[in-house]
Image (cartoon, rainbow, N blue to C red):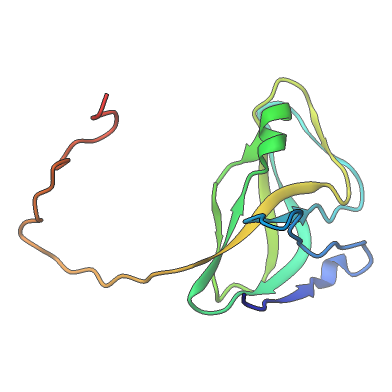
Amino acid sequence: MIKIKVMRVLSNQSREISLPRYMTEYSAGMDLFAALEEEVVLAPGERKLIPTGIALAIPAGCEGQVRPRSGLALRNGVTLVNTPGTIDADYRGEVGVLLINLGHQPFRVKPGDRIAQLVIAPVCRAVLEWADELDDTTRSEGGFGHTG
């Protein structure tokens, strides 16, 4: 288990801000909450950046992955435009969630709604080098749909 410092962002000091939290004992992701002054409506096909009111100090060697909530996707067609969104260890700004409504009805985001999940994951950094050829594998150059 790692500790991560969380700070309320200045622009959201007057709003009720919920700390991200795991909703069950074995949840991989913590729910992120909308830090809104008033309800926001996403029309079908519309996307908006929803503030969470928090900034994180993720330690070096880790990243934050912002992922959709499966219930919102199933019931309403609401997901994230860039999924997973990455919060780098050196980012200290407000965490925002880029929601998109792929459903057929307007979707209302209310202050305090659970809008996404945050997974903290280890990061492996790579050192890349040019090569004249790559080792062969069974798959080789088989791309999209190559297994049927």
